[in-house]
Image (cartoon, rainbow, N blue to C red):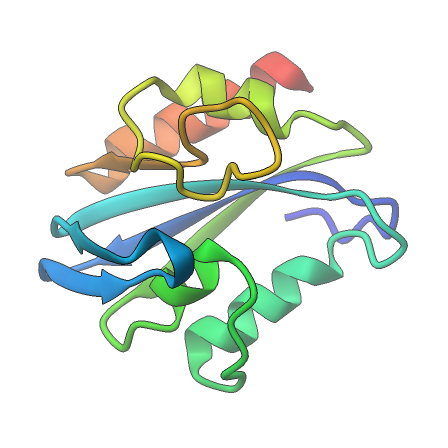
Length: 140
């Protein structure tokens, strides 16, 4: 993972070992299958990739405040933040999301764009890692 202060685009790879119904803010209750999720975000502000530290803190239970859809998934006690893939100095949030497919969790993490989703599911870790790394290579 890059620690570039300039920021860029990142994807969190998250494991959910058991199915779960999770209340996700204004989206309401969502049923998540067991497996692997990829959440695509951007960190282009003054803090750069420090946003990832916030995600890690929430996933570890060291932070409780939920602002974004992903906070609800990361805050669930069964989820585990496995890997973070970054592309520094690139505003590629939506292009990465498009590369990951059209079958994401509807309206998740994309209230400020025209994407269908910024959260994607695959049953196997290796399949998810390959997809995420490939998407980042295409935008980088």
